[in-house]
Length: 351
Ligand code: DGL
Image (cartoon, rainbow, N blue to C red; front, side, top):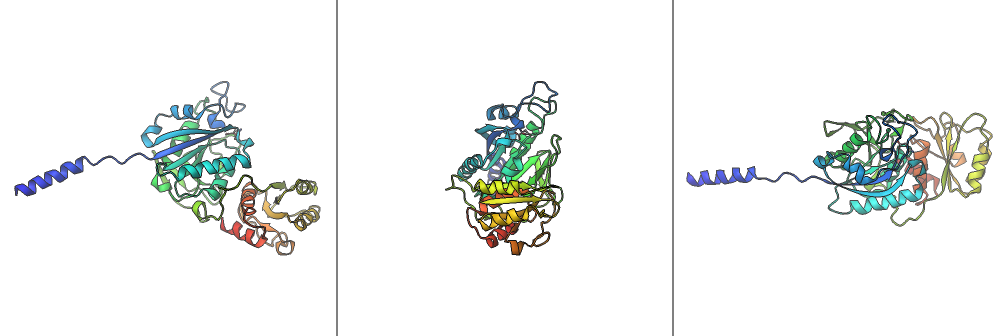
């Protein structure tokens, strides 16, 4: 009997001393933007200066981060995101992959300007080679503004990057208490807090009370399941976007071809319609080996192959549901693998 009592006491005392689970190690990679911006007054919410506050100051401004993760910070760039470039993306992607390969890194948060945040998110969604969480975050108001959204967005993004629920979900965007998928999220308003949305296909979930809640997942391949690898790349193929509108002509197409572009995204009106004045220039570009992708300026919906144009005859590719700026990213990466329009169309139906 005594032996039973002793063993029960031992078990209960050992159980009582079970160590608390360790906090996740999250690295914040800062690139600039409004989240690091400052304004002249507390009511300055437009006309401020982006990319002025360093990563250590961003972390110091949110002491609550220490409750949800072991956080370290790196200042990768300090730029307004309208200046984000292919070269910045390659540097960032290589740093992300190097960090995530380290066993002591559990997740990454990238602070970023909102103007091109959706593009960087999708680029990383296609080239990060880890299932560990990567979360992009920005702010619609500078750090000096009344009710600045940066601190709570940063707190939410760190707790999301530290969450086992975010593993394997692809690159995520955490803004305005919402969890968005990199492939579909887009900036829908120039200045309001709810600017980041996934209008038709829907966000993935919420962050509430310091917890992430997922209600859906992306159906398209991403991160470890993609065929793209930028580790050995020092540049990306030149791809630009032609914007469709009334009275459009061939000038932009001809200029991009003359500049040596390898691909052109045609962001057409409606279902990617091609104005008759532009078709000869696009055909000529294709004959010179330039890959043409039909996208839409509309932003939502499926771009139907052989709908508004005979893509089979023209040997064009369609963007499926990707907006023009994201179609540009996928085409650039596709061109690092192939020039076959058949293969590239497969990629647009896969990612
Ligand atoms: N210059 C813009 C940028 O860095 C400011 C917008 C923002 O970050 O919210 O994207």
